[in-house]
Length: 209
Image 1 (cartoon, one colour):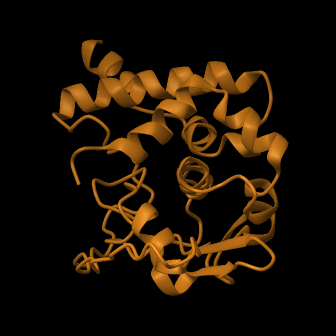
Image 2 (spheres, rainbow, N blue to C red):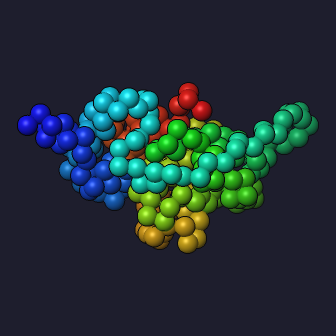
Image 3 (cartoon, one colour):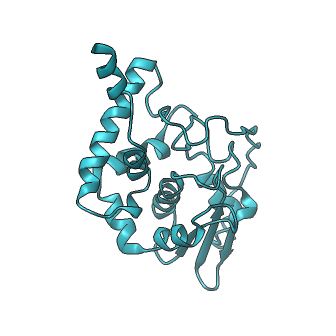
């Protein structure tokens, strides 16, 4: 009996885990209840397995990702006579250390994004980030997109229009994901959820990298 209870506590329904990772797909009143229940189950599993805080070890979507070495940062000196133009490298330096929602590795280490995947159009005031999930059916994709958006909102002036998309052919639900990640109302509603916001903050401000 005790074994059955433990097994139940450590198991998370697939739909519940998807709701936790993809709240933009389920913008209903049920989201709060499902997210809280999933969060509790994940934390219980962490405690029993000895997993570190902030690492999602339960039901890993990609249990064995390819991890790459971090690239050396390029020293940048500020020129007082230069304008405040934003370039892809500056943006990349701000987002490269965001931690993956599943693993204790950065988006840079998992090759989810690179300097080449960022485009800046100063004249039009637009920033485009194309990121590549580690697998095509990754349900963490919206969490990654939200992390990128929150980070850029904190670092760059509001007059920039930021578009965040998955790279062409990198996700099974590419069109729907891109539409949701750039829907202001859905993004704002998702970030108002305390459980999701906590997960995003863990990815943004993890001290383990």
